[in-house]
Image (cartoon, rainbow, N blue to C red; front, side, top):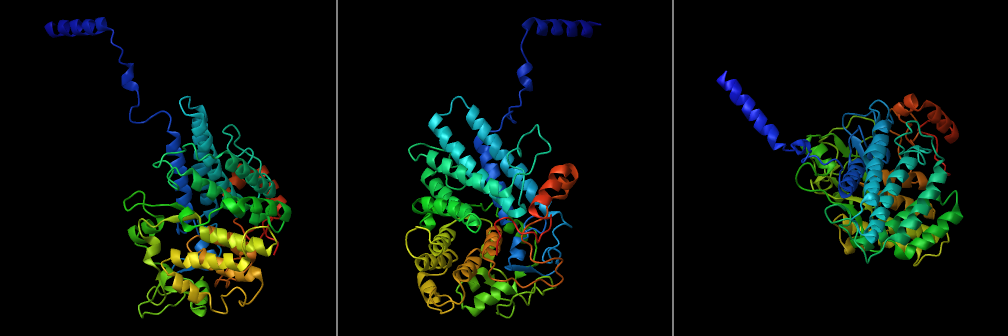
Length: 475
């Protein structure tokens, strides 16, 4: 009884204090709202991880473009993309992990009452540039896709917008973003901006090169729009390797290059060189041969057959430089931009220099990027089958071949350019389930959950097949 009295006295004393203890419920280690910069960084890394990965569950484009083959699993090399639901994974990453986080980040930037309005302008432009990158990836993978209603949380069944209409709008957005970026004001901090560490001048260069890229994708279906955008971008686009848009990975987990995680941490030894690219490098005496691949156990460079079992020891493997833990991923670079300029000259657009000069610059920069020298590049460019004036084929074939080589380890961009130029021709894999894939099927969950809009979109593009050409693919 005495103990009970003591308890009630203590309880009354506590009540008399009337202390507010509701603050104990505050989630101090889990903020209710994520910082805008954190969402931006997460979205950027998510995009980089997707385009860098070689997982057969995520990114199969190294196999599609004939750069890599496999020793064991052949499904994806044989153009079976649905067994492991690769379209669903790719779609989900772009919409959920990239676009949704970029949109939320922009919402928080707009709502921040303490942020300098000029800084807001720069941040919103940068976020929009990255949205353009993601949307471009979506439509150049699938064709028509959700866009105008895509990120409306109250609309679970968005319509699919016309892909060409989206492409033209992406260029308009870049026009606005470029006009708003101001080097006199700050943007995201160097810990939030994982591409340029807050350098607004470089974001302007990236946006101009990106506008050139988007314009060139349209060039065969809307030459006037392409010409105007390329000419507006030329002077402000990337003009040196120092301007490259790179995502830099770190030595330590969880921020290591996805290829390192897959090949080294995951102990995957089944990626090998594909004969299409390796044999072409050998034929041209390309100095990048030993920079792209490692020799087999006998010290020879041998390519594997896509779609067929390959011996790991007999076939060359990817060079370990590609899958170092801190190996960077390129979003856009001087090499790609110079190839755009070469193409623009051939199309009669008013850009500086000559097609041959830009072609030579692109090849030289690629060789140096991979560890070769200017002397290596100069010697290579004397090869009659490489020199612009003497190499066989049309300008599409010359630029297409060398761009296909230079976009090694940038497989999604390589796939886009291979579809645009239609050169070189990739050897069909053994056991191919279809003709060469020029798009991915729409995800199965879209067919099931957004059926009416999916059906309309599939009909509008000419059928939901991997061989259905996108609107810009005219050759």
